[in-house]
Length: 312
Image 1: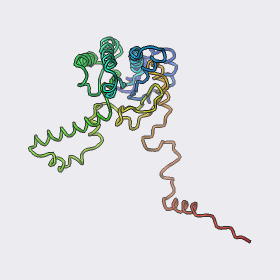
Image 2: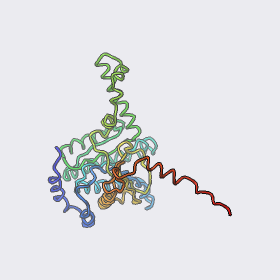
Image 3: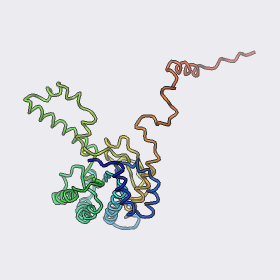
């Protein structure tokens, strides 16, 4: 059951003392009624972080895993309900060297086993999105164990996007909808065409598709953060970030901390989120706009060439 704002604010005040002085200084300027409900992060730069230090890539991944816990615990302390991390893409699985993929799977297992106790202490609940059924069975077992161990927590939900690609997610959503239609047709003893003819196609709308995505039941991200300075979405939550604010930092993921999350939220709160509409303070008030006919006359007048000068 959703908690009241006053109740949640009380919980925030109980956690604020765990922030570092630097985090608290930025947190104190936030409008607590306008915190993002869902922050999504494209964690990028592990390899570059290692390369700049003449280290092997796997050490960058290890350091990046530490950043995950720092950032997620800060999210919990400031009461961000949802945080989704792009941990392992479908493309990573297909295109990275097998040795690196194998290491990432071991790192995932190690992260979950090592941090479940801390997650419980911070009231963090684990979840996953992606084609996780394609991951090694022993990794799936550890994932299921961590999810079950944290299932009763009621604070921040940490969702790891694993073997994830947004286009494949949309394909899977369409398949799920078609499967449901086929099942319904079989139950009724008719064809899928009959179901479509009975109005099923007309009933296909955005909520239907949203509910068929991996993220069903989650709010869409309000804020998308990308580290390492790259300015692309990388096939991440394409449907869900339609109106998300995007924050890009040059900081590499292993150097990203809770302070930088709060700074990104402060930047987010300075944005004017209109969702395609007008801000309340906009000077473009519909009821004071000129009639279209008047505008047409003014435009026509402006477009007319100036009268030719008469030569004397």
